[in-house]
Structures are given as structure tokens and as C-alpha cells.
Length: 167
Length: 338
Image 1 (cartoon, rainbow over the protein chains, first blue to last red):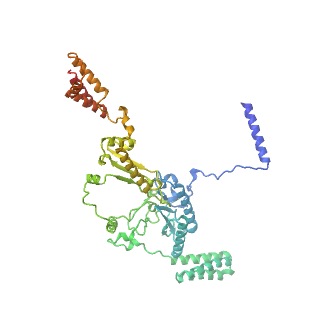
Image 2 (image 1 turned 135 degrees about the horizontal axis):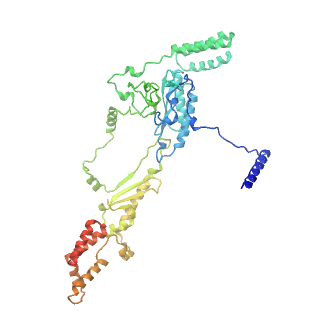
Image 3 (image 1 turned 90 degrees about the vertical axis):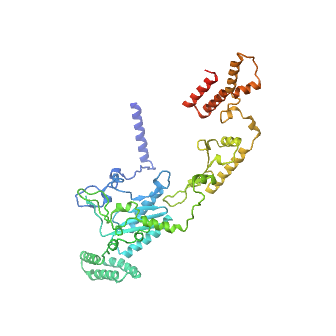
């Protein structure tokens, strides 16, 4: 058994050397390491970092101290379309983050009532109301054309971000 | 540096010109441009600082948010005007001091302003009793009265013996379609159909597991066609065909054997033969051996034999229960005069 192992390692070394020396150059691809225990968590710092309620509680608090940011029926038994809804949600969040850059006070809440897509957002009063109205109209129009469904934005504004605690 | 600052400002100025917003924004932008142009000779840092301070100072003094709607609400206002349809929670429109969330240590749950938890949950602020009354009033003109002749369940079943069920689905998503919508279930009681004995037995045999003996209901479920209308037509067609076929008598139905019978029949059964045999032997101990039609009928007509027949039928058709077995015991005892 030892001899066979030695033979195998010799073979492996030969093969890898051949591969690296040959013109094919096939390398290993790997993704960035996304650890589950570091997702959506703001680590405790010196005590001067303001943090909202949403950011303060970690993902394992969902269902206990936090609600759900996105609601639709596709996750129920016997319903389909869950993957499509998730992809739509991700796109909508990035779109809103980019369109209302620097104005978002907190995460976006997405609700689906039948065909209707409702995006609830809390904004900081950074832009003029007329600009906000323009951007709301622009978003609604564009997203309803993308997704072929009526899109409504329900917006609230606050003077500054609502701080829950300082980490 | 100054040029790059002025160019976007100029373009936004043009846009604002098109927006009739008032002089405010125009003056602010023109002031920003004038500041940057005046200070173009000075150092870069002081210019940007001044521009920033000037802009921010103006912004703070100009942007005063109005008072929330809750301040101007009377106690007897029309709430259906505040929340006419389903909408997310608006803290400036709901005059309740609601708090939601997990409190910080030695603190209270966060207030309603900017509270995302209150926005996340569904609310029923648009469905107060007053709102529902208004909905009902509006819908009344489209409703018709229930027919007064159908005031009990039995009458409904008598006049409308066939029940057709189908499902509608509502879900959140871009598509309305759900393939399970095409399934149609048809239920009918065989007692409401015009069937004689042979037709009823044949129908039950033809429908196999679609017939439920306890409730005497025939259930036909169709889902083979793509549309609900087609499935409904197919179900009605199946019912019609079953009915007509069960009334017909085919030539090969004469060959029905004892094993095909649905119920146990005592006439011509081995049990009857055995009883006759036994009784004849009991009698023939004394008299001569003669098996005639007359004696056979006479024997079968005796009340003890009839009772035995009843208990046998009950045992075989209904199954073995305590009382059935007791009755069988009594009948056998009476038969043999024990």
C-alpha cells in the first residue's frame, strides 16, 4: 500500500509539472470566500459607529427581532416563481441604491400584492422634493417596463438616519 | 477645478430652469456659481470649504419639513380618506404613538418615525368597519337576492343535485396563470339519478373507486384537458355516458357469476343448500326421503329459516360485529331447536 501511494504521488507530481509546463494553463477557479458567519453583520467597534435597527441585528434575529424585507407568496407550499422573485428583488435594491444615491436611510422593503410591486423606502431629506418626485416617477416607469407589472413607490423622509445604537 | 465645478452646476441650472420650481433653487445655484467664480483665484481648499459652507447653510435654512398630517387630524375625521387602499404604515398619517422593535438595554422600543419594522408588516388600516360598510354599500347594487324558494339544504340538493367544484388561485407574481385552475370535480348522489337495481349496480361497478358507499356520492375529477370549460364538458359527458351505459344490458352480462356479485345473496348459496340438507336430514330421520318442490318451499318458509337467512345476510354484507354474531348464534339455536 505504501508503494502504491508513493507511485500515485509521483504520477500526480509528473502530471502537474506537465500541466504547468504545457501550453494549456488550466488553473483552478474559485470564488471570493463568503463566510456565513460574517454576512450582514456589523462588528462591534469603539462605540462611535451609529447603526440602524436593521444593521444592529444579525441575520439569525430574522423572525425573532426583525421582520422580512421582502414579502411574496412564492415561498409557500406548492407555489413557484421563488427564484425569479429573488432575482427581481436583488435588482430592485441595487437600482434604488444607485438611483437615490446617498439618500437611503435604511433598507428597502418590497411588497407584492398580486401583480403590483410596492417598494417602500425611507429617505433622508437630502434632495429637493421636486427631485424626489422626478426620481420616483422615473423609477416607477422604468421598473414597470422592465417587469411588465405596475410598480408603486411609497416613500417616507426623515431628517437624518434613525440611529438605534452605537457600536 | 473651478471650471469642473461650474460645468455640472450650469447643466443642473438649465434643468431647473425647465422645472418651474421657484426662484429659490435658481438663486442658490447662481450663488454657488458666483462664489466659485469669485474665489477662483484663492487656494483650492478655502474655495471648496466656502462653497460647501455656503451651500449647506442655505440648505438648512430653506429646507423646513412641514408639520405632519397627524397634527391637523380631528377626532371625528373620515379615516377612509387617510387610508383608502392598502398602503404601508405612514408615521405622519397615523396619529397613534406606536412603538415597535426590540428595546435597547434599559431603553424603550424605537418610535414610529423612520421605523422600518412598522413598514415591513402588513397593516389593516384600510379595513376599518366603516370602510368595510362603505365597500358593502357600493357592492350592493351589483348583487341579486337569494331565491326564496331555496330556503333549506335539502331543497337545494333536490333541485340542484349535481355539484361542480373548481378552484381559483391568487398569488404574488407577474403571471396570473396557474395550471391547477383547470381541475374540475363533479359530485352527484346516485339516489337523485333515475336508476333501477341493475343500472345502479352496473354504474357502481363502472365507476370503481370514484363511488363512495358511505355517502352514496359519485365523484368525477377531470384534469386531462387544458381549459376548465373543456374539463367541465368532459365531466358532464362522462356522467351522461355512465348513466346511459348502466341502463343498457349487454349480452355478456348474463354470465355474471357469484364472484361478481356486489352483495351476498342467500338464494342459491351454499349456505342455503346446507341448511336445506340439514333440515331434510333432521326430518327424514322420521319420514321418507322425498325432496319435493313443495317441501323445499315449506322448509324455506319457516320463520326460523327466515331468521337464519336474515342473520347470514347481515353478517356477510355488514361485517362481523358483536350483535351480528349474537343474532347468528340465536338463529342457529332456533334452527336446531337447541
